[in-house]
Length: 266
Image (cartoon, rainbow, N blue to C red):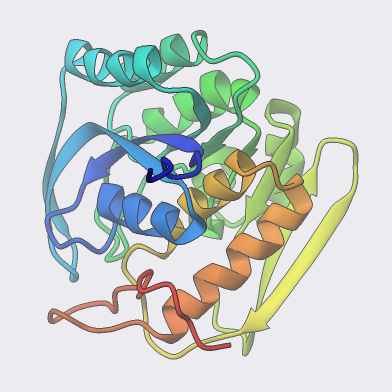
């Protein structure tokens, strides 16, 4: 008799849909499959975008988002939550309501405020809502430096300055350094207990569509598998770098990370 498949941790993904397949829920699903997790995708917004930029988006009604996520929560043991695009302040409150049903479940918050091409995916007050309402219930947030500056309201702030402003709101903050121009990328993990970890990797040529989604969903998967947070950050950064190293250019814009197949060369 065939035995059932081993249990795969379920990660509830609250993200937008990207029709190009580079970012959003498709990135979440592919990255989580690669970690050996089961992705349960809840659509928060629909976007009109390609690998060049985003031209429009529509946030789903609060009731639809709650209905999707609550159906999953009632049916499956959720081991982690990955939060991507919200698009509105109301959606931040919606996520907060859902997290009340998931006490002690780690929330990885990817504060998606801009598309890779620079287009806005929500007004600046969405960033304020994320900082004030969702950061306190999140295990970790993963902004890049431009997003961290919006969240910290420091237009020219360094990673250290942004972290000092944001850490009172959250336990762990990973500020990624991919938007600079240095030969070596510095990804900095700041912890509320005062500790800090610096992860470096070589800068790859080109620009990438969906790298932030890939990192955050991978991190949610590693936490769902029970990996300790600092180790999970390291594993997620390593995996994400490999997806960028092997990225492809299916359109006229940015490269798309190759999150699958699973047999990455070392």
